Amino acid sequence: MASYGTTEAPAPANKQPLLEKYSSGKIIRSTPPAGDAASTAASAAGDGSEEVKDQSVEDERKAAEQREAAKRKAAAAAASASAPLPTSGVGNFGILVIVTQLAVFICYALAGKSDFVFDDLTQEFDTTQLYNYVVGVNLMMLVGFGYLRAFLKMYGLGAVGFTMFMYCLGVECSILFEPLMGVPGWGSYVNLDLLAFLKADYAVAAILVSFGALIGKVNPTQITILTVLESFFYCFNKQIILVRWIPFVDVGNTIVVHMFGAYFGLAVSAVLGKKTDMSKEASSTTSDVLALIGTLFMWVYWPSFNGGSIESGTAESELAITNTMTALIGSAIMTFALSAMFNGGVISVVDVQSATLAGGVAIGAVCNLKIGPAVALATGLGAGFFSCIGTTYVQSALEKAGLHDTCGVHNLHGLPSVVGGLVSVFIPLAISDSDRGNPGYQLAGMGMTLVVSIFSGLCTGALLKVFKDDAPMAVDSAYFESADEKDVEAA
Image 1 (tube, rainbow, N blue to C red):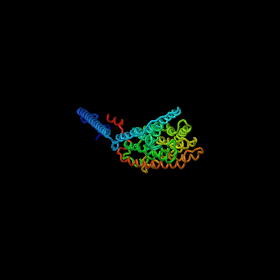
Image 2 (cartoon, one colour; image 1 turned 180 degrees about the vertical axis):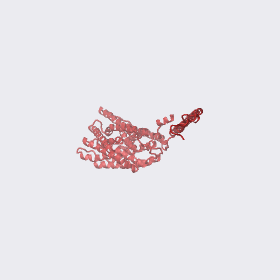
Image 3 (cartoon, rainbow, N blue to C red; image 1 turned 90 degrees about the vertical axis):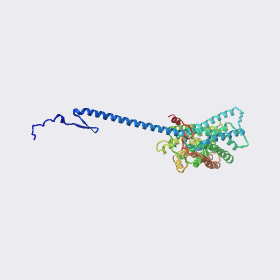
Image 4 (cartoon, rainbow, N blue to C red; image 1 turned 120 degrees about the vertical axis):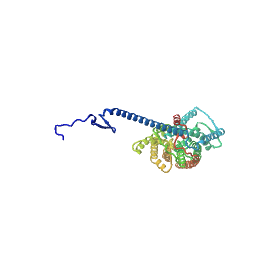
């Protein structure tokens, strides 16, 4: 037994105690025996090289998998780009257009002429001013309508491209149809002068209004048929119903163009229904800005549209322009105010794109009357109010009922045209020196326009349904060669 003050003998050299510590799950000997040092170092070196080798193999395997995945993705994208989207009506588009052009050529050759007579410098001045109106309306049709409809992020080419095609074909057809249905009718020649082109522009406006309800859902063949048929029905309603049968007054085409075009397009849309694939119906910041550019063009040139049919240089012409500008300002201001109120304190770009123009639609029927700035402003404010109501509440209700309105033409053209039509019913009663418009005739004209537009739209929609295809909603690559496809092919 040991006693206090004594110590144990030291351990032999070969029995030296081990100081062990744990690091990464391994036991490391801080004072290994001399004979084991070399083997320990070799083992550590072997373990390290083995780990590096395993890590290198793993990295190589992951890199190979990534390369294979990238190849598969590129191959799938290339196959998707090279294979056209499923369509059925596009194949007949070129033939149909050529046949249409042959028919138009024959009609122009047999019934067309260009006869210009200038008795004095005043007529030459009026013609020059008329050309300015034509240019303004052309800008509204091509740039305004084209870019206003470019709000779908994957359908910019279709919006602008098909607008140009419909404009050209619509002008050709309307130049023939309107004078042949008017006075003196089929027994007279069709005179291709500036006034004929301006009237054709108005017909095209109705067609492009209808296109807004259908944009992204119709293929080129359907667009061709729609343009020809609507041009015919528009001219029938204008010349036969609203000129020959009913002495209807509508200088700025509130009823003749906007009401007819809106409800014709909605009737066609009701028959065609939605596309099977609606996943691409969306906008982006870029597409919304493009649409706002279209809105600005239409807003600036709308006075030319409303005042173009009035003799230039007259007090009535200036009155129409100033009343239209006042109404447009009113609808624009009302739109910004109500949009912020209806959308939780933020301004909806959809409201700004459409409702700001509602004043130009509503004031058209009475823009040449001495209604005073207050009435013109009130008309614009009211049109902006109902247009915002339509965007916020009515359109969603129509969607639930199964009526798909792509661009909201009911809010921009339909509801404001009803407001303008009612204004044209009651305003003449309040103006003592006005003989423009009879309330009964104005109501009859509105009712007949609704009947003709909806009935003809339903018939046109039934025909277009025969040429319906399976392409997805609002995708440029279904009908256009796009730069995105070329990028994929290059990759």
